[in-house]
Amino acid sequence: MRRVVAVTVACMIESIAMAEGESPETRVQEIARAIQVLQPMVSDDRALRLADIIVDASDEHSIPPLLVVAVIMRESGFYPAIERLEVFGPQGEIGLMQIMPNGRGIGMRPEHCSELLEGADCQIHTGVRLLAVARDLCPESSARWLAAYGLGRCPATEDEARSIRGVRRAIHFLSQITDRVEW
Image (tube, rainbow, N blue to C red; front, side, top):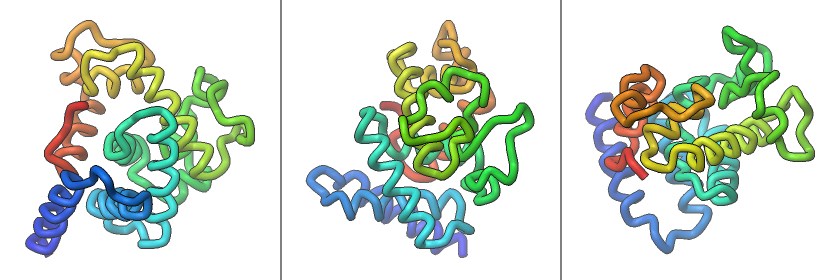
C-alpha cells in the first residue's frame, strides 16, 4: 500500500509540474487525485465534484488550487458531515474551510449563499475569498497567508508564521501532494 501511494504521489507531482497548457478537465482530475492522496476515504465522484469547485474558486481569486486543498485538509479533513453542516468546529466554525459564523467571512459569501454556507460550493468559494484577502494582507509568503487565514491578522515575521501549528500542518499536507510549498 505504501508503495502504491508513493508511486501515486510521484506521478501526481510529475503531472502537476507539466500542468501548463492542460485542459480544465485534466486540472480537475489532478486536484481530485491530490484530495484522495490526502484523504483516501473521499470517493472518486466527490473528489471530482470538490476539485471542480476548488479549481473554479482558485481561478477566480488567483489562489493555487493545491493550497486550497491543503487548507481544506487542515481545517476539516474533507469530512462529509462537516460539509453537510451536521458537525461544526469547536468554536462554531462552518463547513469545509471552517468559516466563523460571526466573522467577516460570512459577509464575503457569494450572493447565492445563505449565512449557513450550505453546500461545498458556498463553503469553498467563501473560504477562497478569505484566503485571497489573507494573501493581499500578507503578500510576502504563502506561510504568512495561511497564518492570516487562521488568525485574522498577518504575523510579524515568516518565522512566527511557520511556528503556528496550523501553518505547519498545511505545509505538511502540501509536501504530500507537491514539491512546491511556496507561491
